[in-house]
Image (cartoon, rainbow, N blue to C red; front, side, top):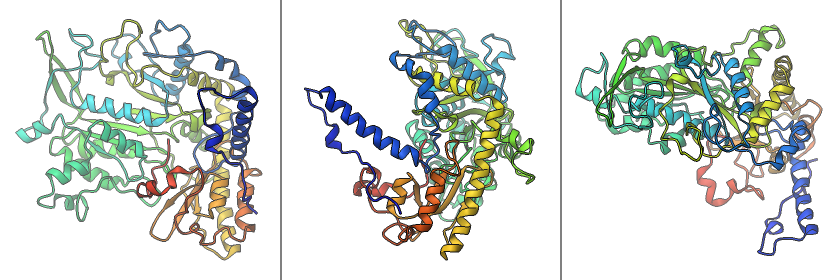
Length: 552
């Protein structure tokens, strides 16, 4: 039976005044917080976060007594000496190797410009998505590249002109500096937010504004108007046919294209087949319109224009969940650790030549006590940064100013402590446990005589099922999404901290033995009522719920 009185946090207990708290009161309040967090960490199943963090506490607690700050470019030390850039560079080198890219090479050779550049994010992949889309926007609209700065170092841009064989009408030339974004209905909400923040219009916005008078959207398979996003398949992956058709429509009219692919969608954990998407777009669209041959001319303050050639597309991979472990999952599959079943694990990284940038969240995998992540691109795509602040003494090439220097320590320690062979076995065990959990939910539904709507996308960590009552949802931190007017599903993620005999076993027992587990109390088929300390479900926020955008 699910406990009806789990630990809670009382806002009033933590209120502060100008007098502060005495040591006894302060320590008591921190004790309340510890009790609350320990309870829910032990039962944590619903979000894609690795809670196996005890070794981090044991190994790295000393560094909490030092302010570490990696301000500026990770490859150029600043005047702030308490940084961790050597560890950050080691982590970036390892990710470059995992993602099929030569590690950072600071020289100016042609080969060096093809090497990796990136940094450790202070936030999760939401920051990386913003920065990826920012670089995509500036690259596609003609901003000056770091590889070709001209005579005005630090110049952002004056005015760009662009020419290419397919830009053969005034309208196409007018569109040539106006990138259009494409992403699926299962993309994380930060992608749409980033596009909005950066004033990058989506194909739906552009289409409904300029290409709707004659119902042009019907040629791409849409019925009443241009949608906001590319449709997804049943498993949560993007509909490649619809994506290619839609991108072709806008490329034909001169627009550069920004495509966002997902690796581990928020609710179903699905992987977009990035390799196939790139191949189809290259053959059907990019080659057809010679989108790799645009020549930019940028006027500068000196009067000497800068010329360079660059492509008219940017593929950004939001690998918040999957990009960190898919390289290991591929090795697990090739080693037979996933059984004899043949599965398709998509190509997604820089081995796919069309991929321009990748982001992943370190707090999801391999695990961190706070949000962090990795952003990576090819050096040749770096935009010329603003002028360097003298007091920093390191180029302003990242999204943030001050950057958390502790996250590189955490990621370095995770990669150092858990070698590749262990990572391969770890992710294989998680996937196999997710498969078994899906099977157990199907068997449980038969025993209960109830369709629990179990769902599982092959080789992912996400298992979906009918939402139980609010107490079970709260106890295991289960995330829920309404799929229609009468049915709400929730999901769990079999992250590395989840074992067969821990919280997962207890959840299955609660679902079977709690006689009210699926009663219609506003849960189990309908949206759950507000739960204490769950601000996102209070009345004023209800209008914003109902998507599967999840968290980063």
